[in-house]
Length: 193
Image 1 (tube, rainbow, N blue to C red):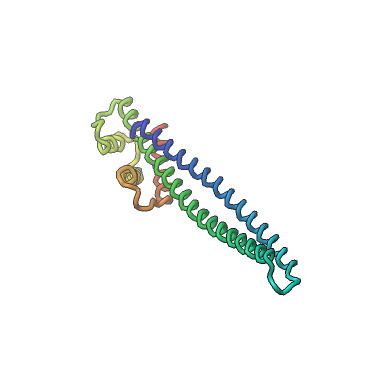
Image 2: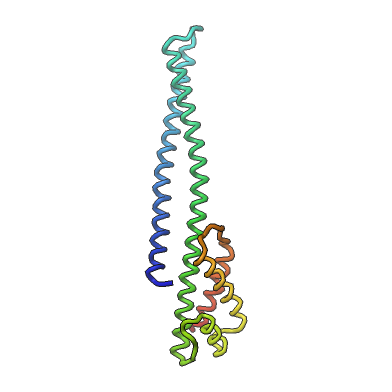
């Protein structure tokens, strides 16, 4: 993955986070509506109860009752909307975190490819520069990584390919991304020594 593409992905993730911040402002406004609605409802119902000394409802009492009912309804609806938005926001946060982890893994894979090829070129080993499989085989054959590292590299390559070439319609298993990320970091650390 090219540096420009990685930068684009980072910018997209930043924009998603900014969108969540704007949603938090909207949530604050809804909380304010809940508080105002509850207060108006309480005041209206209190006034209504105090004015209930007479059995017949006057226009004022009817207005107070209507106002209280509307206020309570507004508060309940705002609260329901807040709960719904909070749930949706949590889903969005999880999705953004998945995208961030996926982007980090793809970026780490690009770093692995670059570092592997640099290491082989600097040490004068022959390999096909356009083939990642040739690069990986050259690393093992020349003792730069151990054969057991191939398992981690293979998992990382499969996951990277899945992330880079899929439409992200299927949910990403964050635990497997973290596991592969850590294993690939260990391989990169070996190559950096």
